[in-house]
Image (cartoon, rainbow, N blue to C red):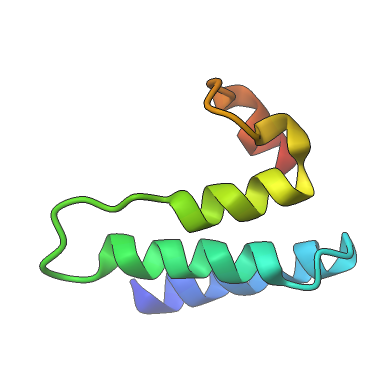
Length: 74
């Protein structure tokens, strides 16, 4: 499982670096995945990732639901 996560993060980081985000969004996403998969956690608030995402894609600021647009953006 860890190998899969590393590969996913590597691909995301490569894509994001080419989009000139300097890896910040990929790092925030990686931190979110670590929190989600760490043992002993009941709930995870993705605030840091959402803040970074809204910074690079202002359409995601606020609290409106954008399910189909997130997958298109990433």
